[in-house]
Image (tube, rainbow, N blue to C red; front, side):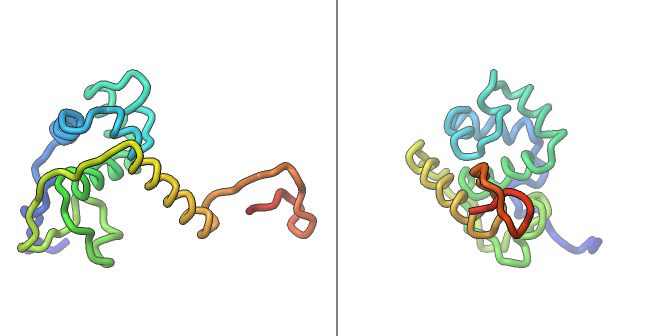
Length: 144
């Protein structure tokens, strides 16, 4: 890895998971976080300690929370396509970009975001809607 890469402009640099979660929970609350992120540790008996424990063990969930922190809480512009594939902590934030005020979020907006994500996933064939009727040419159940 190149030692010359400077990650210090990334708001996640040097920020522990517990502090990150505390900041976003203090600002938004567990209910709105669950509405946007759909991670059960934010809904079922939520606490900072239990959520941190889960997020430390679960890479996909931790990255989801870190992305939320960067692009909703810190309200940074979306990353370039080459940075998109990197984990949030390894992304390089350009020098001119600085964190802004946290985005205003609502349950209605969270529902719209979920609907958009479901449509995109369905378009890309990532979800299966089984209706119980066999698909004769595939020997299994059909997808919508």
